[in-house]
Image 1 (cartoon, rainbow, N blue to C red):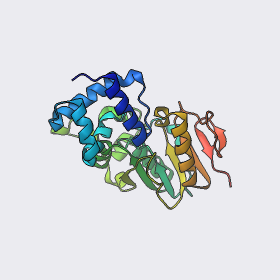
Image 2 (spheres, rainbow, N blue to C red):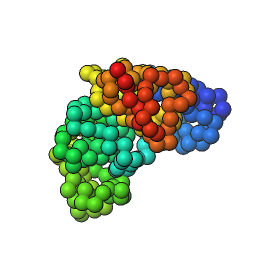
Image 3 (cartoon, rainbow, N blue to C red):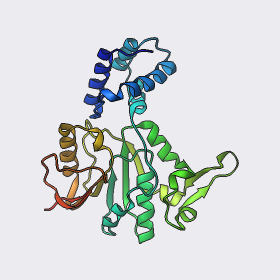
Length: 253
């Protein structure tokens, strides 16, 4: 399968309008490789025919977004951010939850502190969410687990599951997973005490980033925390949050 520059532009525009993800020129080879897999699965013969399929098949469009979404994460990533979550925070939204490592890490952190908030975890990728709901991962994903945590909150796999771990039911019950598109979907309600949207806005340009940040602001309670990734910043856009420290912002009443 060979993709032309014009076809790449069509896919790039489609991805941008539907998800806000900005596929720059350097992503053409990656997109071509991911598309080749979808063509094999669907039995479609050409890129042009696949574009027509996407226009008429909403289910395949979701599979397409799954294929081009990047989900690289692990347990207890940037764990210091969780220090801002306190026992009076009842509703927390992990707005780019990927395959579930972030919300489960957060749930474990809260259990260790003695409280159980309700955690909503959303992502655009159905494949990632399916993995999250199963709660089964390669043990390497938990290499950053603090001492004793792995044994306390995970089950070790045996036999065909050797090398895998499963999040225990007590932790899984704290998290509700749901598909959500940060760009096109209205924010869930009621309002949240804390919203985490980490390591996803690096894929957005300034316009989409601004729109997403404003949407999440409206979903946050007064004095609630908005937490982004360590490599991200809101400095390039206008917003109403109060800067606390790198990655940490607050909605001040």
